[in-house]
Image (cartoon, rainbow, N blue to C red; front, side, top):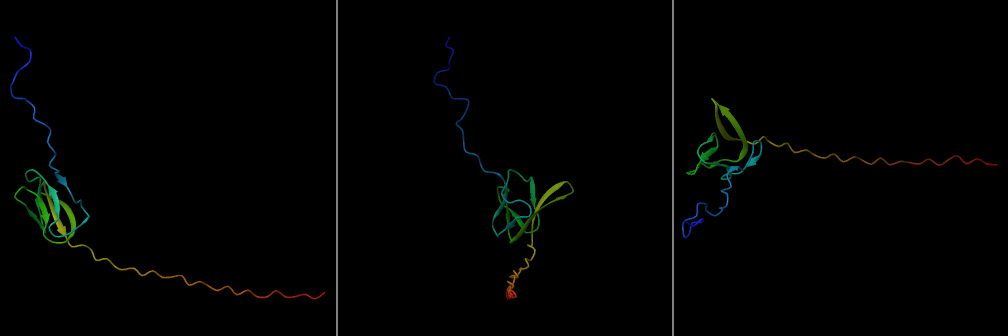
Length: 109
């Protein structure tokens, strides 16, 4: 008997590229409308405020803001909340002080 199979199907398929799933934007980061927050299989994370679920369970933002992860009753939610207002700071330039040199007293010999 032959020790190898001949002309049969292979048991292992060739390697395939990964599907690039996972968290794309983390908590506290800014996000724009339509940007993907999480790509997932099934609903590990659920959509909260400002987030919608795509047909492949992808979570994406429907309003601009900051991403926030919550846990309610043991279920994980992703929300997009309004970004805090940034207060503009004005740089105060230091005024250079002019140093006035006084002439030294001239002593006569």
